[in-house]
Length: 197
View 1 (cartoon, rainbow, N blue to C red):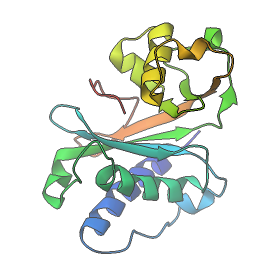
View 2 (view 1 turned 30 degrees about the horizontal axis):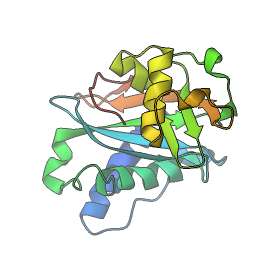
View 3 (view 1 turned 180 degrees about the vertical axis):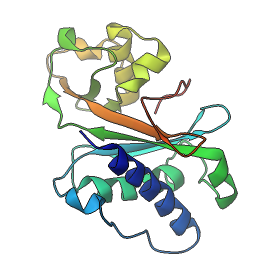
View 4 (view 1 turned 30 degrees about the vertical axis):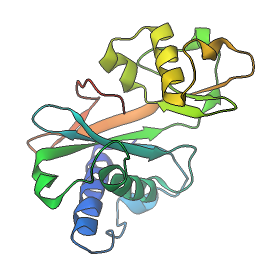
């Protein structure tokens, strides 16, 4: 588990990385207490509008390639500037958005019948594409297990029900999820939203 002070520091790191890059500077250094994280860990950074909780960007790395702080610093900038679904975040928008971090466990094979909505994030891989959905997505969308799996197929660009095919790979992971609040504190969980990260 990631401690409260470390969660707060990771949120500061994510926001600071975006602020500095938008200002033409290099991303911030990683300082204590975050230097204790040395093992590679995958993560996603989700950016939402403060007023509406609408999605403004979401990108990540999975499987893990670098220590968690380095991953968060990198994917925060990518979510803000390189999510192909949205225009890049501007400096003027920074006070109007909030950051959410999902730190992932290593993906493991899973059978569709064992998927638990609200606990598992999923990765589906076929010959033609890969789709990933975070654990909070089916909860936000009000999906049951089958709808979650079909939504994953949509994300992978394959027909609904493709998760039933024997040649399809299905992996599951869990996530620690926390976000900024309007008063500068750290909140666990995910806000309501109607968009797919």
